Image 1 (spheres, one colour):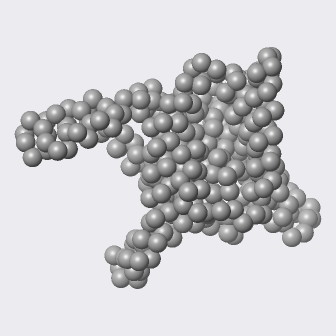
Image 2 (tube, rainbow, N blue to C red):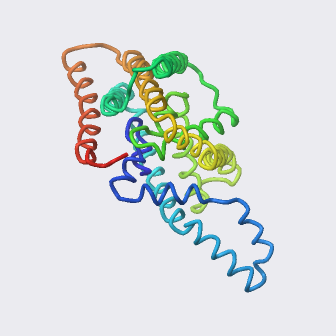
Image 3 (cartoon, rainbow, N blue to C red):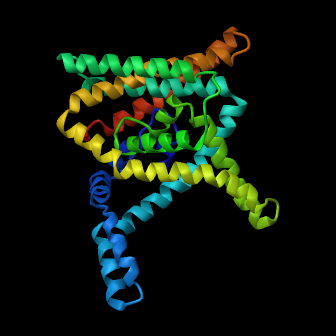
Amino acid sequence: MGAADSVPGVSGGTIAFITGIYERLIGAIASLDPRAIVHLGRLHRPGGRQAFVTELRKMDVPFLIALGTGVLTSLVLVSRVMHVALNDARALTFAFFFGLIAASAVVLYDQVSVATPSRIGAAVLGFGLAFFVSGVTAGAEYSHALPFVFGAGTIAITAMILPGVSGAFFLVLLGQYDYLTTVLKRFVDRLVGLVTGDATLAGVLDLGATVVTFAVGALLGLLVFARIVEWALANYRYVTLTFLVSLMVGALRLPVIEVLDNTATWSPVTTLVTVLAGAIGVIVVLLLDYYTESLAY
C-alpha cells in the first residue's frame, strides 16, 4: 500500500482489496477511539495495563501497527526512487504520472454518472477546481510552510482508503509531492548520519518538523476526513466518484505542463521516449485493474 500511494495514479486502497485486508482496515480505522488514552494513567496497575491492552486489541491496533510499519517502510524506499526520478528525468517522470492518472480516470469511468444535475455539478466543480489548481501549481513557488504541509497530509491520507484514487495524486495537485519526497529522503539520510556522526541533531530536527507536521495532519485526516469520505461514498456514491474522477481529469494539466517545460528540444527520439513513459504508466494501471476487476469496491 505504501508503494502504491507513493506514486500518483495508483491507489493503496486497491492494494488493500487485492490482499484481502480492506474491510478489516476500514473497520479498524472506524473503531479507533481517542478515549482509550484514559487508561494510560492506570498503567502502573496490573488491572490498568490489562484494560489498556484489551482496548488496543478491540480496536485492532496491533494490525494497524503492523500495516503502518509496512506502509512507512515502503514510503521511505519508494520516495527515494521518486526523488531521483524527478531530479534526473523530470519530464519522463511526469509523462509516466500522466499515464497513471489518465488510465486511473478511464478505469473509474464506469462508476461515473452525469445523469442528474447534482452529478453534472460535481463533475464541473471537480474538473474546474483541479484544472485551476494544477495550473497554479505548475512551475510556481508553492508554499511549503508547515500549515500547508499539515493540510496536505489531512487531504492525501483520505485517498489511502479510496480504491482507485492515490494519496500521492493529491500531493501532486497541491504542489507538495516533489518537496515532500525530497524532505523525506534528506530526513532519513540525516537520521542515518546522526548515528554515523555525519549529521547534527539540529539538522535532523529541522527536517523532522516538516515530517512530523505531515504525519500529524495525516493522522487527523485518517480519524476525521476518512470517515467523511466513507459517509459520502455510502450516501452519495456516484456524486462523490464523479467529483473524484473529474479531479483526476482536470489535474492532467499539471503533468502536461511539466513535460513541456522540462523538455529542452523535441525530436523523434524524445517524443517516442516520452510517449513510451506515458504508455508504461497506462499499462501499470490497466494491469492492476485487470487483476482486480472481479473485486467489489
